[in-house]
Amino acid sequence: MKLVTTLALAATVGVLSTSANAAWQASPGTTCHAALGSQTNQFNTIGDTGFVRIGANSAWVSCPIHRTMLVRQIVYVNLNHPSARETTCKVIHSDYQTGANREMSIVARGTGNVYAGFNVSTLGAMNNYDTYSISCNVAQGTTVRGFSWQDN
Amino acid sequence: MRVLVALIALLYVLAAFYGYFFWSERHLLEAKNQANPVVSAALAKPEAERLRFPDLKPAADNQLLAEQLRNLQTGFEARLAQLEANQAAQLKALQLQIDTLKQQNQSLAQAKPTSLSAAEAQARPEIELPTSSEQAPPEQLLDQQVQLAKQRLKANMSQLDSSLQTGVPDAGRQSIFQQKLEHALSENTATSHLQSQAACNQSFCKLEIQGKAPEGVDVLQTLWEQNVFPEGTEVMTIPKVDGSGWTVYVAQEGQPLPSVVQ
Image 1: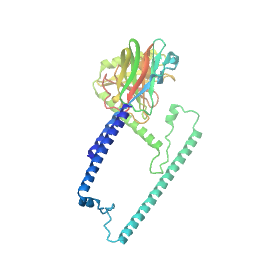
Image 2: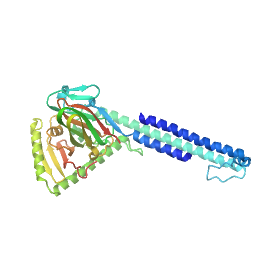
Image 3: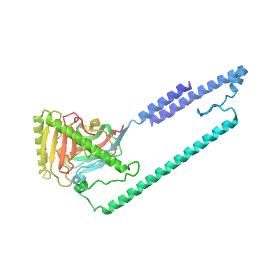
């Protein structure tokens, strides 16, 4: 009976610890920055979460994922559209060792809270020192609320 | 937080179960002992302690046992001394490596001019790190990994190029990419002088961009801004080794690049 109890305990702890490491990481939009230096003053931060385009037309915004963070499988970008529109976002995997970049773009469509989801499993394994970043071409009024990714 | 609370609650429940069963077994044992004192005496009789060393044979007298114990102790002390000596030697070797690297770093800092251009940095010969110790320093290992990765990339690019030459060309897609490239580069005065060439087969396209852009101009970003690459398309960009341009591989829409590169 003691053996059964011990095994049940071990199994439960194992399952719970696996689900506890469900491995979603997130970063707010405030970590993004204008991709072009001349347009730095055409964005505003909103509280602790958002980064909004206030200038006319559109500009690219870059949101880096810290180099020590692993990225696997899925990356999401969370945007807010003030009206029906499309925002093109791309995800970039930079290989530190070769200098090669692997990139893919997705368009987020709709009004209000919209997502662009990337399946990055084809962009190659993330090795030491590799980096990931997300860039979006945001129009006036569009807010980058944040982005999230799986790390295992 | 919920997971933590659930885990703690579960631990309490399991501890309660464990205590209950422990108490039950002990209670049963005590009841049996009271009912049958002979069994109780038998249970209370101490068993002979088993020797934990399989190579020891049971000794008939204490003197033999004491001698075996002395031998074991001597062997253990000798092994410990040997391990300590090995550790000291390894520490000494590591310290030597650190000192050598520090000296190299200092001499490099003195010899290095204020700034090196990319071409000068590439033309600079690789620095030979000391190989006197058994294990290469981390910098050298990283350098080896970089060289290997670059070789793999080069081999994969050669495969892609040969497949492009031997495969069935996709003239329609090639024409579209050629037009898009030329249009995108001509839109910006900083990139209008760059030369571009597209070649496609049925599974991917290769775009060659030749020339140098002014500092601060991101040519590849320009291509994205001009929507050269369709949505959901995997793109691989590789700067040329001599800094004279870029090679871009574009997969078919919704498909990964064939047999590529990590």
